[in-house]
Length: 145
Image 1 (cartoon, rainbow, N blue to C red):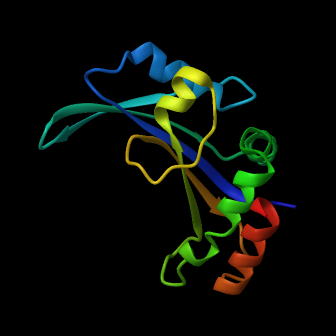
Image 2 (cartoon, helix red, strand yellow):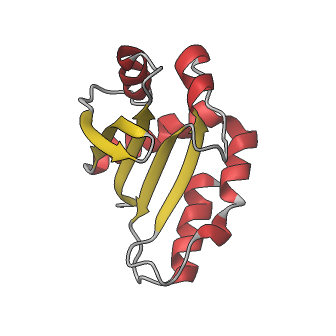
């Protein structure tokens, strides 16, 4: 059964970051080979790069989800599941967002939930039918709870 339409993982690469370290850390999230896309972004503070990986195949999203659950562990998965109130009915797609601390993952390969902007940003697009908030919350709790 399809549970996710897409998983998108993005990370900003600041001037002081070593580009190879950022890309290797991004690739390390995936239990299979990926090739990140890199974009230049103009911000008020100057230019930055955004590296991202998007996966849409059922086999890859399911494998990634299982790997993600193992990386976080039971305690952090409960914290992720407790954020079900972040789903909004006015969104066209039901997206579930998780931020993981960039430094902890880059240097220690420790997956730690954060609210900081210096993070790996994960977006899970839930495959919900019918497209109702209650159905989306139930699926999110099943996947992340």
